[in-house]
Length: 337
Length: 266
Image (cartoon, rainbow over all chains, first blue to last red; front, side, top):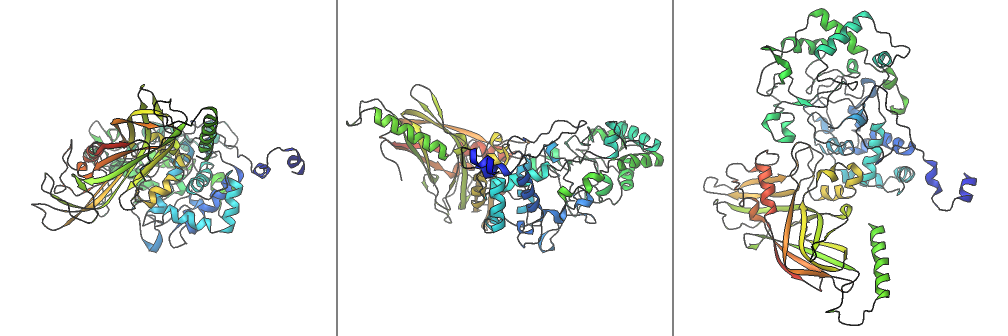
């Protein structure tokens, strides 16, 4: 450093302490949709993002952090909670979604309330049943904090604590959360540890036939909004994508979730109504209800839903369990402690 | 922004030094750059817009009391007498006009010298800007939040926040209305642009700062190309049919009243 400092012509050599983080696109993944050049993850940016992710100061009462609902061991979902619940024990109406592979997604939240990852944190921060804060207040709290003053100065060239850098740091943390090291990934990439059992292989074939038109690519979602035929819960009356688009054509449509780590993300569906994967498959087999916006794929030849025998369901679940990525679930880079 | 201003300043000094400046300049070539300010003078159906005060009934027989009238204007461009368009730097081109805080004068420094016949600007935030993420929003996001121009359930901007109460023949008790218009996620883009021909060219140069005085008629939000009856629906936030209609009506509320050449308006 002394040597570098002594011959560097500008006076910003402290910036050199930070270093870019390598973002590797798994070979079985599509190209990322996130613009990594606009906000390239760096060591200190990522560390700052992680600190913010686990900091209750982002909420009005100082206790609810992002990590409060997004718990790593449950693939960053809120295990045991049907709905996210935030400050003052207020309950939301939707089930906490997993975060993984956000760099590859184009729409965020169950209804696509934002189409940019950077702007996503605004939603839980300002939602009165989640963190109940304003972004401006959060930034003011951070500005008053000596440690954050240092953290921001290390992570960003201009060193400023403002909404732009605050959101960039959080995005850098989330962008790096890639899950692509499950048994399934090893299988498709012909890597060691990728041997599937006969039942898992059978499940994979069934999945390709019956599930993969929506849960497509190795992200296991096509990112679209669809009505999968869940009977609406009259107590919630959650209209889904219609809330964002204002269009009755979008009523009861929700984003197709990724199925990565699905073994760990119970409960299931946007409202967390199902406790097990078997219950989910039973629903697709015999619980789908018709409505004007029901996805046509779930109503073919006058049959509602997807016909599945018990052994087929068991095989599909065996396959889905191969999507569990223990490397990701235990990755210390993402863990709170 | 600093870089730009510094550059402009340097350019101005350079030009200032290189050409004479000791006459009154009436027939001289315009040189350098100057500042144009745009005054958004909010009104309601020909009268001043006074918050918390009832206005006379509109053509739907609705008596409207406005409590909040804020909107985003953006992407300023000026067309000169030769038909050339000057685009104000996009990153600096987002502003909030607020009747509540009386923020109604938009100042655009660094406009190249010339005579401009046409003013163009947008209402709201375009998708290109939105999809630039945190970098693109910069400090504007905090400003929007402070002015009640962010949704809380969706990470998007309200392009127009028009609130108050009304009475009508069928609604005799004062009833709150809320009109929040913005884009609907990725599914419906309500960003619109306005083109206003100026009655006289606005002139700007090193020696001349000028201003454009706009009169805004907030009553047009409800009654213009599209007729929106609050008696039918008084809370319009994300409505596939009415929100785009309100977006169109909003583009029709701006009229150029006059141009002041050689004086900034504040």
